[in-house]
Image (cartoon, rainbow, N blue to C red):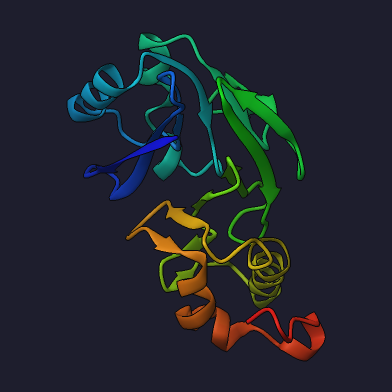
Length: 200
């Protein structure tokens, strides 16, 4: 598996092209589609087959319409449609394959109710805005923040430490680093209530 990160300068959001060893690929969170991104797809991906949407916010989905004018793709999302485009709806625990890429969908609500983290080939986590390098996503209420922290800690931090975190914004990280240094998680979690002693 190969991952090609691209920073969408228009939205300051990360877009990822992921390919298997045969060149079959997918794109995670198509923000603004620019010439550089298309060149990465054309140069590194023999056949682009799918789109993974971590959540429906425009910052991460604005380029979907443009992308579909160029490629014939299946769109995977926790929603039935994104920006008027029909999606293959996935739920927590859904598993599917694109080429030789094994994909698991993990629901991590809080930033938005449709937030999904994609675990690909066990070792890569595409977290959207839910888990960032050194922080977590913004939420609209304390209850949503507690929900987000609980979801991250019980569903993501139980994954092996070596997993690489590919966030929707900012630097790529590792799960081990987030366990040790993510200040939002360290400050927000009530470990007694969450029964998470021993995870961090």
